[in-house]
Image 1 (cartoon, rainbow, N blue to C red):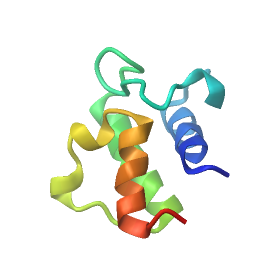
Image 2 (cartoon, one colour):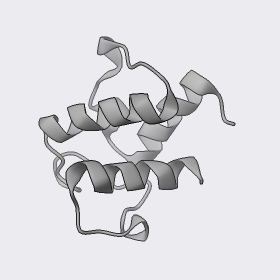
Image 3 (tube, rainbow, N blue to C red):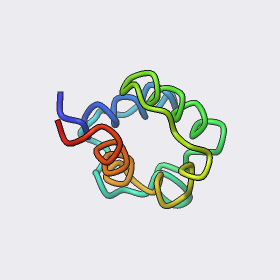
Image 4 (tube, rainbow, N blue to C red):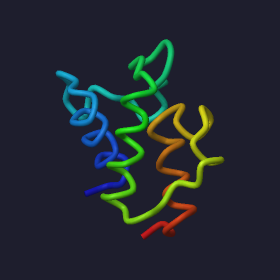
Amino acid sequence: MHLEKQLKQLIIETAGLDLQVEDIKNDEFLLGGGLNLDSKIIIELVCNIEDTFEIVYEDEDITIENFNSVDCIAEYIKNRIGPN
């Protein structure tokens, strides 16, 4: 499965959203005005991403910039594990 689709599915499952993967744009804001995910969901999402992609987020990497959108999260993961 494409990385961005995997992330969208994780977001939907973690946040309990009644959405389909296709409903979330890659550049849609996840915080604030977009999907409006709160800090509790972001922490759960971090844990799910770490488990799914076998990476560990450093504390300093859990920033608004790294969680602004699916694209931002995907970029972070690609930088950690490589594009494949």
